[in-house]
Amino acid sequence: MACLLIVAHGSRREASNDEVRELVSKVRKVATDFSSVEAGFLELAEPLIPDGIRNAIASGHKHVVVLPYFLSAGRHVTEDIPADIQSVQKDFPDIKIELAPYVGAADGIVNLLLDQANS
Amino acid sequence: MACLLIVAHGSRREASNDEVRELVSKVRKVATDFSSVEAGFLELAEPLIPDGIRNAIASGHKHVVVLPYFLSAGRHVTEDIPADIQSVQKDFPDIKIELAPYVGAADGIVNLLLDQANS
Image (tube, rainbow over all chains, first blue to last red; front, side, top):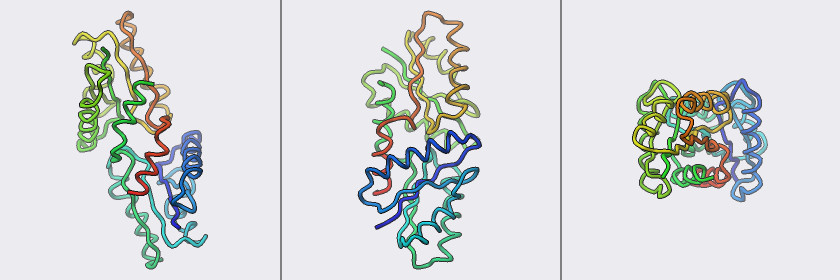
């Protein structure tokens, strides 16, 4: 089964990085389609995205799904994260490294916003 | 009924701001509990949050719900947005201006991530 790597920007504020790690733990508990669920960061926190992918490969995964925990399709989503993936893919051509759509692109985001507005 | 003001960071990349505005349009179409749903920005795009709140008041709303379109509880969510609200509240003590929980705090975010990972 695949590894799901949820990747966030990373912050100088360690509490923000821990918030991501806690969310990843929650996803791990319910993610029946993935044998592992880990956090990765674009910068400022560890593991960095390429290291997160390499860790997944080192632990035996042949398939890694990289999911951007971002709300908009800025440069980080359209350029930086794909470049991080490519930097590992070239060393491991037989490993399937997929980029999932970013959070802000989810159909469910509209209802999630309404739930928050009414909570 | 209340105005829902969905507030994002704002970007130099206008396409990112338009992405927020498009999402707000989608929410508007299904938000039966709000008489208007508008976008606001912390910086770099218009309307800025205080202007968004003032616009809602000017159009007759007595209740404005400010919903941070942010994934983590960083300084923007914990300090900057509350300060923007306070800057308007002091001029309009009889208007109810509420801060809704930010997107990353939503219970539904775990399942939304799983949906994205499997899409």
